[in-house]
Image (cartoon, rainbow, N blue to C red; front, top):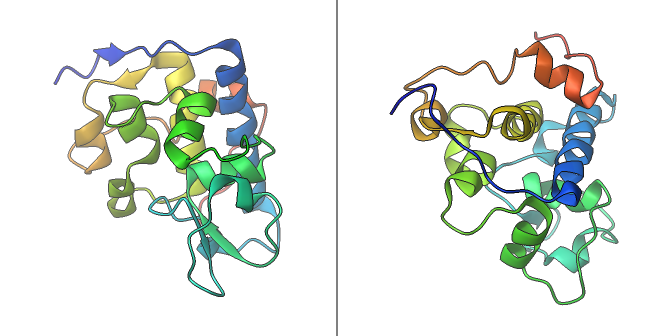
Length: 169
């Protein structure tokens, strides 16, 4: 796939704002001294760490206790509310504009990121990458570690969310 070819999803102004809000939340939570890496797992929507139960979108915001959430679970924690009875796919389409089995869904929420970049900061920067460049044509190769991307170190993407890039250990 051509590195310079990108797929440009059509996102509403509200969805674009959701991307920025969620990206800021993901980066900010890693800078909190109480943050634990178990709080983020790209493979989960929202999992109660005490019981092992998966939660529906409308259960996440009011949940007490520790959760392990992927991008969508953290969207709720960032204040992007679910509608009553909304399932995860409907929530994803409404909030992120990402249809099931689309390149956008794979770039943002695929559990396959566990192998290469299962971090909240990586997820945040992939959101910003979509807003500035679209979904890379070689997203699968990037996700699987067979190709490179500058989404983590791209200064323009950090400028977009108005935050400083955290120092790497």
